[in-house]
Image (cartoon, rainbow, N blue to C red):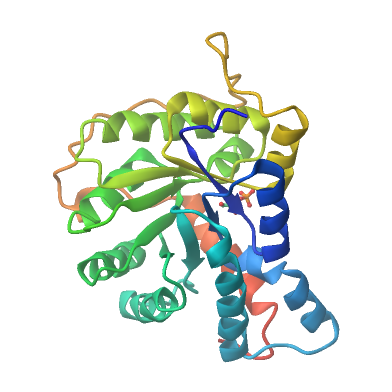
Length: 286
Ligand code: G3P
């Protein structure tokens, strides 16, 4: 196979699945996890199914074991670990979790949601050398805010635009990726684009065309790519967008992050869903 320049991460929460993908591809550059994916981990499901619900401390310990098993399997794109947050979580609370999680493995990236609280936590994190991945990003303005909030980072910060969830509401999710790449081409390169919520081979191949630095992909899509003998997009490749085009905005990346419009309904819904999936595994509220 021709190894793509885009780094390939497994979007999942099961080390066994990561091993299988690695066997299939011959490499795995990194891994992303989130509360919903961790709730689907086979061991956690077994525990919950046997009536053995977890305390929030148990859940953290299980999450730690999972990422510690995945950590040595992946390359330099690292393992993204997501903090627990809901509408009440403060930046300081997110940051404290982030610091603890960052100590679990040597190659951690801490995922914070693309909200004002999440960006404040990210700002604090990068100042302390904690690598970050800002997740649940659905707009170019949100990505511009990520750029401005992580200016002090010494290592690349990731921003994760969620493609499939924009497609789900009739918009062209890949347009957001394309627009962010174009906007960042005028920047200093400290934020890397990690395309997420990838649902199809077409999404993945278009990421290669757009040269996203990273893409996190469910095992199922990577299996499909392998089953077709790892096709790469040729000059004729044309991405057929399933949704309404999203126009490019000319944004000044040097503005303070608070001046960008970072509200997005899908970010709010995404946090709600992560919190609900996390709570479903717990014996009592976090
Ligand atoms: O990487 C983000 C991903 O886990 C969300 O994907 O398919 O639930 O939108 P999806």
